[in-house]
Image 1 (cartoon, rainbow, N blue to C red):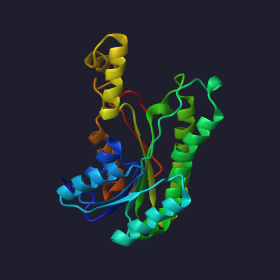
Image 2: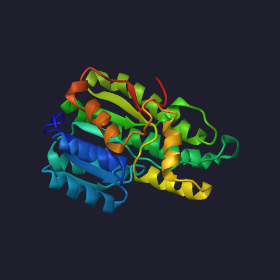
Image 3: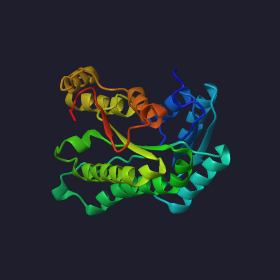
Image 4: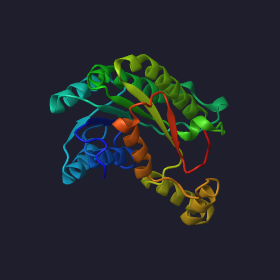
Length: 260
């Protein structure tokens, strides 16, 4: 590896078995020590052990980013453990309501906003003093849903479009303090969650996961789906000094499914 994050301290929210894990491990493999945050403590402990196995330090802090005291405890824990923070990756995610907007309960949209938008804003606000001190960066994990208006994705798009707008405004507001704010927007991610979904769909329609994969990939320029580590590589780049002149941008990582 190139040690893009050599000696840096990176906070990753939403650490789970797929993308959050990949982001945390990729940061560690590039030289960072990592603060792991999520509501499910077992995921945190598993990833912390994997990071220790590659020779970096990890601190696992169970966190609910929709809760103010819990979020404040995350900041305190990160500073107590490492004395600084160089990057914050807002990766927390919840499965959205998959209904047409005409039949969607507004409460479900509010719930998505509370996590994706307000939770990410809360962590960004709380970590700003530490990030300003280190001239650090924030990376928001968004979604390709901001590039289309397919039926049943409306509630999800509202949350993620709001997150993108917030990220761009934060880039303008925090730039004078030396803090960069960028976004990564993945499309399909060929990880455990999607593999399970394809297996479910294959059983439902009497086909195979391989056929569903091929059909899905046929709409992409590279004829394949990006894997979690490939999304994580984009996050590492934007969090690193190699991207020191990049802020307010959204990098789509989708194997050419959409062009932006």
